[in-house]
Length: 170
Ligand code: OFO
Image 1 (cartoon, rainbow, N blue to C red):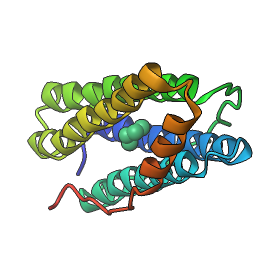
Image 2 (cartoon, helix red, strand yellow):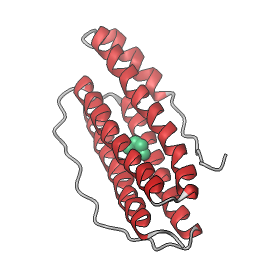
Image 3 (cartoon, rainbow, N blue to C red):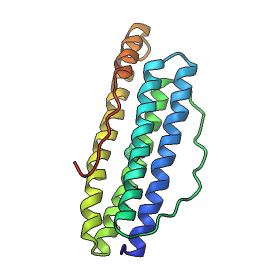
Image 4 (tube, rainbow, N blue to C red):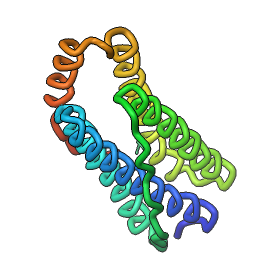
């Protein structure tokens, strides 16, 4: 049986992961609107990964004989003005998610729940990757974002991203 405090932070994390999926979908729609279909594909794949993150948490709660409590998902913002600004928002959002994952880790420690501590380590590593991915695109956009040819090539490159299902059990 899951400790109740740990269960609460895990359920709250499910909501954040599904909100992340919504946010990336809003960004994907924006990129399609401005004709950057590779950027759109990249953010759409990210949305799928966020759904996976939420589902893995959900399955874990069930596996631990806990109670899944799904709460309302907020509407994502839609005030996007250019690719650099969107990726800066992505980085900011992922930093917020990292903080939230860290809180799950701390709560697991405080409640001596070693299984959840072990489980959440996968998310800790995943967040390092997510922040680094956003930072990488930001750096490149800052370097040449104003040049149309470079933006075209970056759009193609981001469009090559393939969806891969990752699991903490791998
Ligand atoms: Fe699920 O990591 Fe991004 O938000």
